Picture 1 (spheres, rainbow, N blue to C red):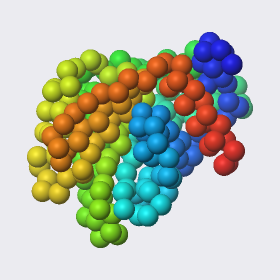
Picture 2: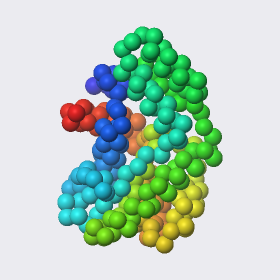
Picture 3: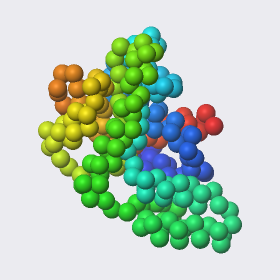
Picture 4: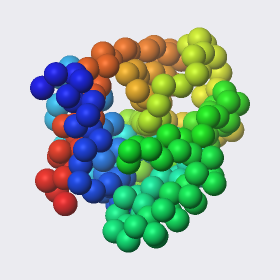
Amino acid sequence: MSEKDLNVELFMFDKPLTSRPGKKYVECLALSILQCCYKDVYDEFEVCDAPDIRDRNGIVGIEVTEAITDADAQIRGEFVKYRLESNREKKERRKQLIEDKGAKVAEGMLSYPVIDSQIEILTIQNAITKKMEKLAEYKKKGFQKLGLFVFYNDIPIPMKLEHWKARFDEVLCKYTEKYDVIFFGYSCGLIEYNVRQNDIQVRRIDRSVYNGIKYNTRLKIEKQE
C-alpha cells in the first residue's frame, strides 16, 4: 500500500472509535511507538491496565494519557455522534454544533480550532498533572520503574529540547515522587525525558512509518471490538 493510499485508509473505517476503544487505541499506539523507537527494548511489554503498559514480570510500568483540551475533547465526542447519526437532519444539527465550537467538518473529516503555544503547553502539562496521583498506587503494586507516556495527536509548535524539559519540570517540581521517565509522543516524533538522569532526547519517526503504525493499531482495535 502506498503512502498516499495509507493516508486515505486511515480515515475510511466504517465507524469512529467511541470512548472505551478510543482509550485502548491510544494505549496500543503508545506501545507501538515505543517498540518502533527502541527496537527490541519493549518487545516483551503488553497493554494491560493500571498501569496501561507493563513488562511481563511486573517490574516496569508505563501509564498512558492523552493531551487534549476540554474543548477539543467535547468536539471529538460530538464528531463521533455525528458520524454515527443516520438521520440527515439530526446529522446536520450535530455538524452545526461542532462548527459553533470553532471546528470544521468537511467530507467526514474534522479539523479542530487552532490553539496557541501557551494553550498547547498548558494542555500537555495538565495531562502530566492528572497522572501524578497514580504513582503511589503503582509503587504499592511493586513496580520498580515507572514511566508516563503523554500522547499528542498533532505536531506541536516547535520548541528547543531545553524548553520542553523546563515545561516538564514546572509540573514535576511540585511533587516529591516523580516518574522515572516522561515520554511525549506526537505526530512523527517522540521526546524522552529521563527524569532520573536529567537527560532529554528526541527521536524522529518517518511520516510513512508513523502512518503505518497508526493504521495497524486501528486495525488491531477493530478486531478486538
